[in-house]
Length: 557
Image (cartoon, rainbow, N blue to C red; front, side, top):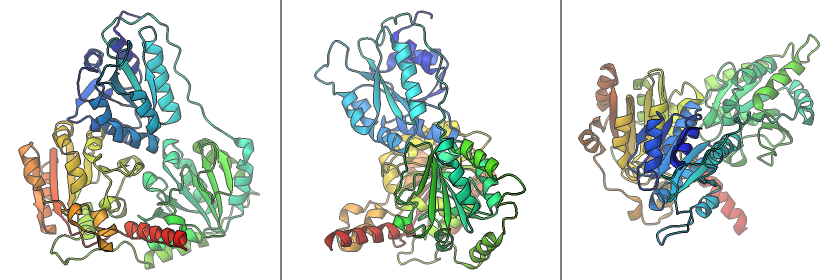
């Protein structure tokens, strides 16, 4: 290999896996960024280190391609920790390249970065002068195979030194877990005997590319289908019930609860998906196929550790043939579902009037869905408003809904994530960021980053001048609301000052400004500062609050 510095070797190896880097330059990563530029990696500067990993994380969620974040050592590194924890808990492959203490020993200002990362569940790979390339490769392969975030640390005193010569091994082939003899035959028999089958797909099914096989399997069985929020519309078609959990309709949830056999494909069955234990009927047989090594929920009765796409294809093969019990599957189950979905209530439409005269977020969401470009990729921060996009907006593909902060229950990562998604969006799609005012203020410095990175972006701020979730959870209990309130911020004015088009949306008629911008070509960034009421409680939050109260009562009893 040609002569390179330690930082250059790290950048060289990374360049064979990725093309985009997000971060803030500092003493600890300046040599790495210099080498990355010379190698042709695209660097997108962000304004706060907290955005470095969040942007790289969202880049992967949007495109399926690896990206890196980078920070300096010490305070730059610690600023990135919340996003690092989110990536670990959401199982997103991402790489953080950071400076670190000198190899000769820590300085007074250094902290034990590897120990901090370990506390978050992230492995640290500290490069050496003689093995900078192989250690970098090991870190990337670990991130990809384990689906997690990793830290590549470059000791400060080694960053600019010449790296030793080394021969790198060939990249690892992706391992496919496939436990065919462990239960696929039993799964096929259970599905073949089902009268009311349901297939519930999660993000693991989407990442495995299993949509076509699962959709064919559903049609063969006459099954109803649903998806988690992270696999929204993956199985869209005849019998599709929409999203499972608190973002779905009560009508759809009722049908899911009547399924006698449920195939869970690549979904972890989180409390939100399971409606806190109320989604599936008590007598339903639950099968889980997942790349995990063990079941992820106590309701799972039959578990197969396997690649979802491969497993679905093999089950289809087991159901083939004229003697197959599914050859003439009756359509009664789907017919009943069609009738009940048509007659049953959907999501509440919202009201034209609210107690405080501000917009009802439900009617606003419906109006925005009609206005926003059809070709859209939606990024949303965490917060009370989190359900309005998956409930009311058309989401073209699973990768077009990037929900950040939900794994770690964080807010404030939305703007940073939008920067990464903007770099990954292709085919002329418009990026749409949905954020609450509290989370938006946390990441405000990176509004400028988004404006610089996005070709076409709409920012929707659900501005209720409060931390809405806390208002409903704790203000409703009589706790003081003073810490929960936010002085109303003119986000439109801030956006305009930074170079974006913007408008304050106080009525649905005010959306005409957004419509005009879209009709003019939807170029650049438009910020819609939507003044919503805090009087409307999201149904998912009501469900969560009821479950929390029931749990407390059970403990007290």
